[in-house]
Image: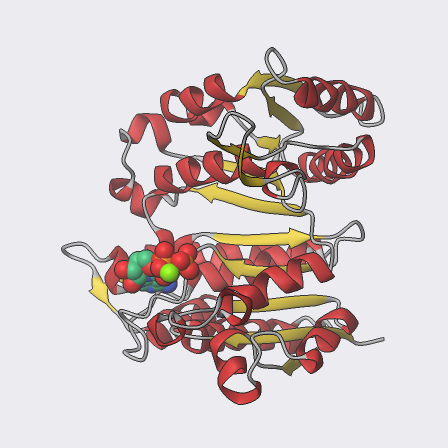
Length: 357
Ligand code: ATP
Ligand code: MG
């Protein structure tokens, strides 16, 4: 049976970078006989302009019936005056919750060719390759009660609630252990179990699930220490698993260690490894339409799709190696350009990866 990919290019640079990723994936699809079929749909501002909603039912149905979703980016100044309920970003949140994409994977890889782009010293970051697994549909971002209200003494109070059920922790634990098995078999669970009861439960469920993965070495770390260790000695980590808010913060720290927003992919998976794949950067309206955006984050997102949803590690590695080869050949889009390199356009970078393949 063919495997279907819903392609949602979105807004801003979305269509430009997705075109390059599809170019690369189409080549591999034919070359390796992967049996993938693609179907395009509108999301975000583009969908609002056409249908008056950022997530049309046809788009949602397509995503539900597909095995994987490839997303460019959504949003831009054109749609900022809109009411929150129809903002482009709502399209994304809608897919995440409708598809139950609770496991967010954000690798932070520093390519040796770009080591000067990092905020840290080369000896601290060279060879950096870590994966942060963030719980995406629970925790304090969703817990009830929430809000701002007036207390009995007349003072305003703000409330948010960090809630995790055992089953929510268990499923993100399995997701993270399985990923660790595909990597270097080291998993660090980050919590604040000394202060927060909810993360005490987190820690005990992680430990319990860990017994089913004896080949993976599990460790635990408090989030404050983890933040410090990520900046002090990030190479000690292989896979980190953590809750929604801790993951939000730690993955941004990790991203900055690699220096270049145009290089970082992501995946958001459900319990069956069906997923949505997208670059971590946004729609970059400041450079949209100029053909200068870096397509590598999106191309690397396709590699993640092949690895995690389609179980094609060899195809994924071919893309990752081709990106390395392209960087070795000194081609650079403007965001990663430095002196002595060869400046190329979005499609020039896509072609360089294709040639390497
Ligand atoms: P969002 O709100 O969607 O997270 P943002 O507005 O915070 O996004 P981006 O859209 O990611 O941020 O853009 C931040 C900066 O990085 C901009 O200057 C943008 O041009 C640049 N940028 C983002 N992605 C790329 C890319 N693929 N190639 C080159 N530059 C990029
Ligand atoms: Mg933005």
